Length: 508
Image 1 (cartoon, rainbow, N blue to C red):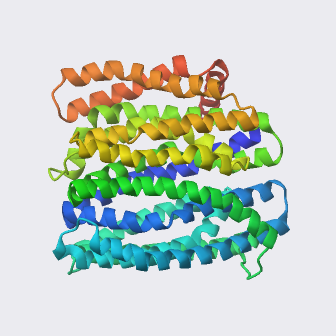
Image 2: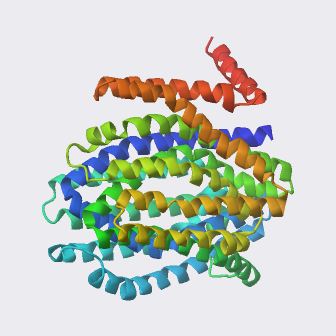
Image 3: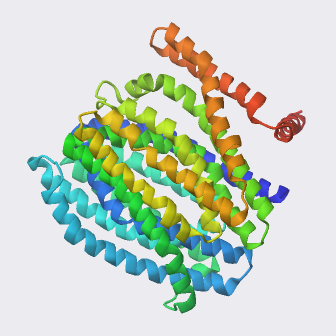
């Protein structure tokens, strides 16, 4: 277990170096892109790009499925099955990529030009964005087995490096966007595609040289093909519902309002994604270990890993959440200047709060995937997500406004989390209610307690840089103290003390 923890800690370190770099650069790129494109074109890029990506839902499904089978056979040291798995996965992805292109160039193109609320004078640019996004999606789907191989082998150094390359590439795109003449929205989409293709080439060269199974052949292992399709088939249905729900909400907002509202949602999603990526480093690093523990029949370590990783993830979320909730208005205004689409800050706050649900559910879903219970997860849990669409539409139809719609839209994910918790408890004797009380409810309480002192300071001071610095500093200090006193058990405290003392002794 100690060796496993060291590996997870090492991989998490690489992932957090990646996330810190991505966060810093993404804040810069988002502001410049918004400034150069304008709120309306930024909304078009967010809406159309998100719409196209929603068709590639199978990409993420097959990624988790491919990663799961590769990690499983790595745990069993079965080299032949590893080669068969990769070759079969490539065949599946070729078929999926072609199907996605056909669907987008027929139904997707019709929907873009007849149903979305986009100004007529910008339809030409929107169609350019659409076509370039189709090409990007095609290549990204074909890339899935290579990324799955990197994460299954736990080579998070290259995974982190390529993520940083992607963001640095976007900085180069912004530099060119400033100086290249023409329609900025079209130029931005073209340059984004170029960065994507370069990244794909680098990934493929690395995998071909370092992983023997990544030398793809046309050979397909039929029993494995059937098994992978069954596993991914149930996941496909679940992911389709999740993506339809997410993009459906974006389309509903577009129908009731305009692309400016989509810009607000896109900015909120960007902020939330950056924070979510930062706090989910433990999750990404731990998932291959979860599958390997199950493959080896070590269910006690399997359960402890879910508890520990989720706990640490929520601790990190708490450190970021309290100052963000109190000072997000100042940060957004400082970040984007005066041209901030209405409701952006409200959307960010809601997604941050509801992030507790998603982070608590992540390892539970990973546990169900690891034990091969995707079918049950898909039948009983995932369909609940689709309830968000009628709820959001009903709220907006009654005139309650987008903020109320955002709150109501997060009720189904909570119900889905509870169902997943029950399913994992049923199939593995996982202590579900203990998890709900000791991890989910307890961390909500810790966040509330941590926010009391910073909240009163926030209310007592005038808005500005001084208040921002004081509130953030006090928030982090209070959160750390509350977590140390009430969140960590004696064993964890002792481990932290030993690590700190060990580091100090090395320095001396």
